[in-house]
Length: 350
Length: 271
Image 1 (cartoon, helix red, strand yellow):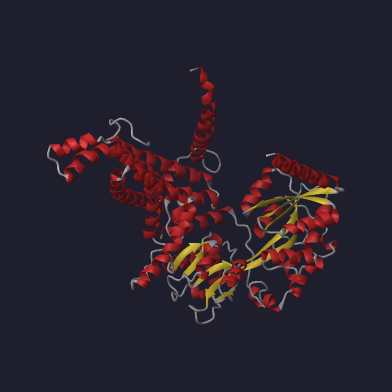
Image 2 (tube, rainbow over the protein chains, first blue to last red; image 1 turned 120 degrees about the vertical axis):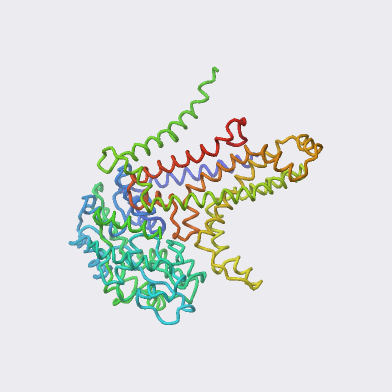
């Protein structure tokens, strides 16, 4: 019993010491950072604190919508946040992000030109957002079940794999497939085009084994389905589990997504925040994050250093040509959102 | 009497977590996007798509309840006939799965029923199948029955256990065969238990949406799924609230039917 008390005392003393130790180190300031869960190597934060003496308060959320409502509630004044393209667009439009001098960032050049260009879709002057990770949506298929190579969305609509295909259980990802197959923009505002896509999906519905989100990959890995519409990051993991899987971005084009960092209007020390973003672009740091997440990185210095196998993995480094017809999702008007919601219910009622 | 303050926490609970949310939902249901009064949200239950989802929910809930009753009676009879020490163990086994999160258990069913799942593996060994059960209403029904069966067995078992052994013996003495004993004595006397079982199975089975999402493969749209979509995807809380309110009305009406015959017979065991 006595032993235990002593042990407890020592532990408490040590813990206190640790706490004091933290407090004593020179604090140059604090940054409150908001990111998706599991979307940064925790070690990276330690390195930053050690190198700069700036303390990081790190917060996480799961979805862009959750992030938005937490941010807007104003309970915590976030300095920096990382979220997805359309949400960044919304934040910029609503004046929630502040512009900063991206041009003067030391490691700006590490981020490839084409990613800055992609970001221009919602940040025309490249003055708000620093790209972080990106990816595509495509078809993950099982080569033991699908003999000929897949290169078109057509394979999902021609009935050849009836009962053996899985679609994404999210409105935009499902309609994107049909819109792109028909040759329309995935951001179309034409009701006629959307309804045409809807007819196609209605016709496809009996052939669809299931509409899934995260499990879509697992079902193909387990051999329960021949193919599924998935995000490229999922495809990479799927390939790790099952070597017979292949991922393709269909030639008609697809959705490309880009997550990026912005500085919020609550941030008082823009230079300090920019310093953190610059740090994230540094190649050793970007590499750490890449090896933690395994999504496609826009950091060309990191791609340069990858081993051949990774470099040739199209889920990690997509072919340039496969991105030609890809588009980002942009914010929709409330009318179009409502149309999509109604059509989606109709599709599911089938 | 002096200890009225002891009830304070429950009062806070009732007001804060039952009344307040209900009022919020009701108010939101009666408003349109601009904040003016409307009945449209509540009446939207008769839109063809919503109506279809409601009918499917009713069908699944009804089917599930019937199957649960049919499975629960024999189980409860067997439980009753067990020796006292085994009885405790049997009930323990029955409740044991509930210690685990139900989503996990439903995910396990997904594994069992999938095309390359455990079930088809076993059937394949016997030279049958493969059966394509996953992502269909059959899978949804299996999952729902599995999930709610204990809530049917326990109240029925309680009700049957409460029946005095002498009553049954008296019936036998007077010449009733086991069939007659069951239909004329056990069944009527255990009806209150069955009613609470029905309530505890029918209502959640009708309003749930997670099982449909997982085992229905996103292809079966219950009214719960539509409400969920209105709240999380469409961000149309008014429509979602309206549908919730009309669903509540529906549940209340169906309960009124179930309870009507029973209210006279004292209280029930669980409800």
